[in-house]
Image (cartoon, rainbow, N blue to C red; front, side, top):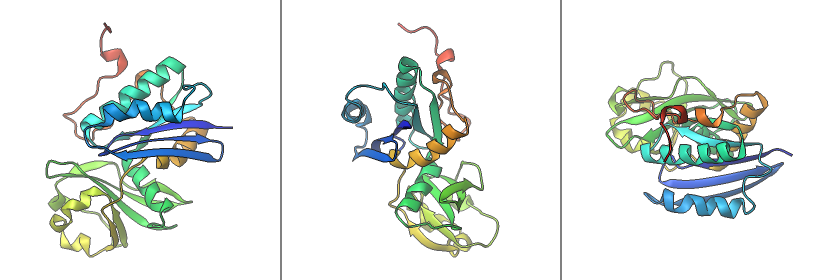
Length: 232
């Protein structure tokens, strides 16, 4: 029986989930700037006996809140290092599309523009196609001004996520392709799990010291464990 722990604190939501065979337990709380206060308690509730018996730890690796991504990466590194577990990084933009699939907002063959508010007048975005009930990346995770967002082609798009806070600034030609918009959608740990299962089966794993948030912007960089120097 496969057991995977998932953690995501990339947005205002703090969420954890546990896959045990075919069963999923999930906890989620909207708590801006309180992730540090909540995460350990949520993990204890989900894993009262600790991480023993887990096969891997999945995490929302970004893009997203700089602070939130650091909190997740630190927690995942600690758990994986202590319990000698592999980590499974999952794009927050991809997991958000998986949420749209789970909730019925996107179906097989849909093209989904997944966005997040970068909170500095920019948005994070990536384009996905739903194939075999999973998001298939059509573009890389990127950041841009909403006015500069362009997507080639003419296929209809479902647009999801908090980056739609800037929808009025997105070029009208692109907006005309939106058949549905879901600005309230957000990444959550539960929807990391299907993508993490696929990664685990494919052997796409990380060691604890390789856990690293994806910030998209080049000027922001997380130091991996080997680069962080001696611990006090």
